[in-house]
Amino acid sequence: MATKSLKAIGHQLAQTQKQLDLLQSGPFKEGELPLFKDKIAQTGQFPLRAKTLEILQINMGYMCNQVCAHCHVDAGPDRKEIMNRETMQQCLGVIAQTGAHTLDLTGGAPEMNPDFRWFIEAASAAGVKDFIVRSNLTIIRANKKYHDLPEFFAKHGVHVVSSMPHYTQGKTDKQRGDGVFNASIEALKMLNKVGYGMPGSDLKLDLVYNPSGAYLPGDQAALEKDFKKALDADFGIQFNALFAITNLPISRFLDYLVASGNFEDYMYALVDAYNPAAVAGVMCTNTLSVSWDGYLYDCDFNQMLGLKVASKARHIKDYDTSLLEGREVVISQHCYGCTAGAGSSCQGTVA
Amino acid sequence: MDNNYYDPADLRKFGKISEWAPELGEKFFDYYNSVFKEGALSAREKSLIALAVAHVVKCPYCIDAYTKDGLQKGITKEEMMEAVHAGAAIESGATLVHGVQMMNKYNKLSM
Image 1 (cartoon, rainbow over the protein chains, first blue to last red):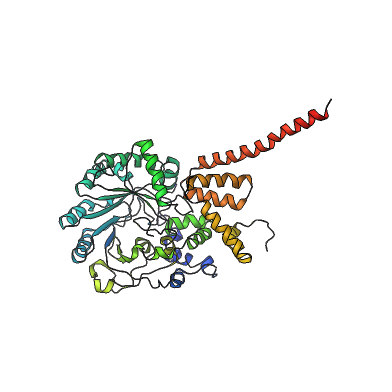
Image 2: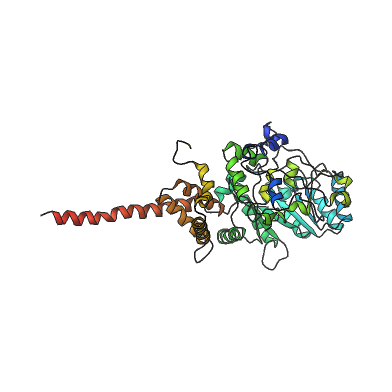
């Protein structure tokens, strides 16, 4: 299991251009597989355009207590990119001036940002009702200073979305690191204890399932049923919904695909599973991703590929609805990950 | 054409069999897709049956396909291996039960 980010070891795939080159190579270069823009053009869906902003997804920094094998952020303890208060204030300004109703906080481990609680309190005071925190769960157990996070989340009605690749220890630890499964189970019990995911409670706890390997997620509803049954029977754990999210060929997952000889097959699988109905619901049409340093991207994946929005307003301080609404979404072949099968987004399937 | 009977890349060309017999191909794939839908048996259970049969008929394409299908459905490796054993047990049982025929014949021919 890796303990350092690709960036820290100087891996060539830490360079976004190398990743973008790979996404144009092999079967795409030889014309065996269509480019994403040509594929969506076949159904009259090119160019993809952003609609009204509903969700501001804020990447609070790439620092994380875990170094997951599939992480598209290349997050880890050695990443020092952290959003500061000034940028957070600019995000709050955008929420105030637009109809965006949801703040979706991600990372890294967003809780590791020293201003994480300040931000939620400030946003809460500013009237934001819908918060999503994408928590890796183990952070709650990682250090005493995080033990009261479940109570803090509950106080502000934060909607907790947590990663859980499998309901068995072996598969979870293989993807996310030794000990992650047990720590996650403990954290889930703590969340249940304050009311998260419990029947009749308003506190929402959803789980995210990413495949632990070079295959696509199966049927979301069937997986949810299996997870619910197993987590309840084995640990008495309750949760609301399971989001099945496809791994996109970016960063560490891309490195894994190439190193394991699965890259070509995986791209074929994504293209074979292309579903035009999923294109209509892709998250880049109602979400804007903000990086730790305030730049704007169509999604968190584009952020990791260094693909800023195609607009004159490229930074949160320059946010302008008239420039950003209707902008053409920047795409490449990684986008097939969001249109495969029932589609994939940070809120699970879309079609 | 390569000098191999089996090429893993051929699996994704499976659909091409319809090109030379469209009606039959279409009927086959319709049937195939219907079989694996959720029914009295779950799609998960059918995937494990398919994996066991894939081993018994020793189809490398089917083994690749249903190992991946099992992973997609969250089936564990322990479940997959037990399914393979179920197939293997029936296959070896099918061989061994013919031992009764051998015994019958032996007894008939012997004084």
